Length: 300
Image 1 (spheres, rainbow, N blue to C red):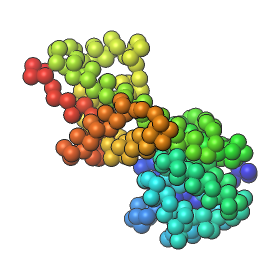
Image 2 (cartoon, rainbow, N blue to C red; image 1 turned 60 degrees about the vertical axis):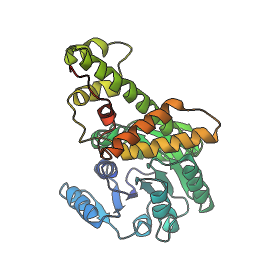
Image 3 (spheres, rainbow, N blue to C red; image 1 turned 90 degrees about the vertical axis):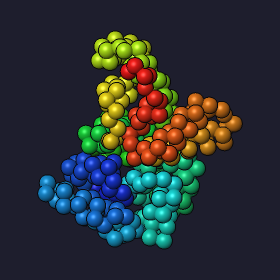
Image 4 (cartoon, helix red, strand yellow; image 1 turned 120 degrees about the vertical axis):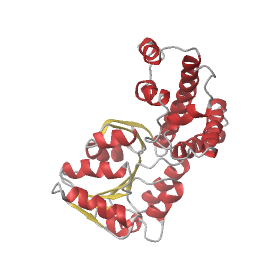
């Protein structure tokens, strides 16, 4: 593929918005669609101030017409089906030989459905969920887990380099989504243990900063510990990756595990803990708000 391409991007949220900026700065022409017109207008205004080549369109089909590659980054299976396969969906106007890259975290079944639909239309497809959150999108430091043919992934790779620090081809169509499920299961389990550890340290009256210093340099160290210890101990959760979205992702993971005949008791337990936080009104709080479910010791 040439260096300067016409790209369509469907979904300009906290992830898609920054990702498009990196693509435009790389010299590509961006054609975008977002279900909220106000967000789309703000997006175009933001990047136009930098002199970047961007335009918004009224439907996914209009945005995707004549695009070399179409990227999708929306909410869930139903959203993807609407913007790709619906009446005004992107696939209906994509040219034969074009490429569709789905960055949404969906079920593996949706990834396979999209792959089949694209194959019938002569369009390449990569299911490519990302990890790294809003900060990763803004800083161009996302990790991308790719499912699809080697050819399709290699076509997408140099374009995704604009916002990714790591791009790994993990297997055929649907494998990217399954890898993302594993990613979310790991995060959920780590946050469950980290929450209990914080409450133990607080209940014992330990110096919280010294405790972090003592344990973060050993085997307990994790991204969650390094980036969430201070905010979790300070009861700060109004940022980051929302619990609503984590529960959606864990639901896909639990469904896929069940389909494979596997048991995932830790994931199921933490998912229910998140349901408790939702019931207390924490739907949009960061996933680290899991600690708020656990009461503090009376002496802490």
